[in-house]
Image (tube, rainbow, N blue to C red; front, side):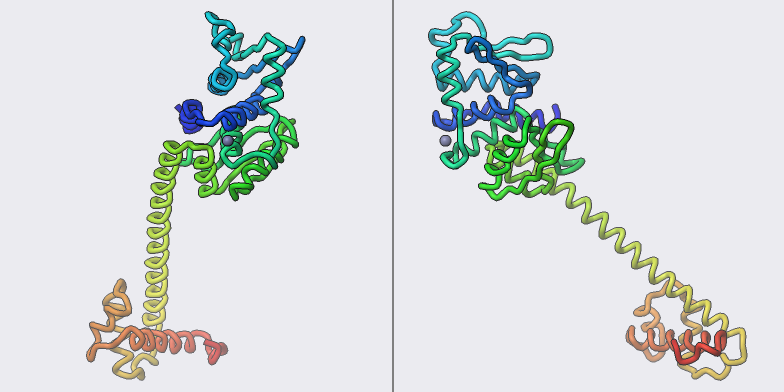
Length: 304
Ligand SMILES: [Zn+2]
């Protein structure tokens, strides 16, 4: 099962305790269900390839309107036709009652109902990428109005979603890992939230380790390159008369560097007599290089 699939399974099982929330979630499924709901002769049809959304719709209708008491006792309220799951309310009066109950407006929605609505919309048209791969949560909206309405609801929980046009759909999406976790929390997907966080922590730990290794490799590389340059300069000095004129301290450092090409500045300092600190070693090596460069490029004297 995909990460998205697991979240939806969890959300499908979650039933809000209050009727107002159940209606808000029902409204969202009604608004966001994959295929446009067709209504002929006052009949209500909700159809989608998304079985979980249709099943949740059915559960919520049962709870909010006591549907299965006197209505189609022996028949399931939804069934599969081709790839579509269809839920039909044949009685026009029932359909009207439902239709007027699922009309929601943002400004009169309580916070609990806003959560339920977002949950319903996600169940009907949402998905989340596997956090191992990337951070991406999206809800496909059939028009701009619905996309902005939903973005407003998320904004009320301080989740800033963006909207892009993909073919004829307005797709609302969240890319930030922390905000995806907050969205899961708002919807009440607490198991998914923990899974997501665990994977996110593992991923970030791996990234940190990789960064550290890369950084250390770069530092070693830098040290090796610097040492190689010093050795080249010293070898050049040794090949010319100027070397004989160097002070005893500089000659000692030159010989130590050649004898210990992989030693750090600190190690070279410990090998010197008397022992030197890092800056003392650095000072002598730089001086050796400067003299070498001056004999190689007399005109650049004073620039280095
Ligand atoms: Zn509510």
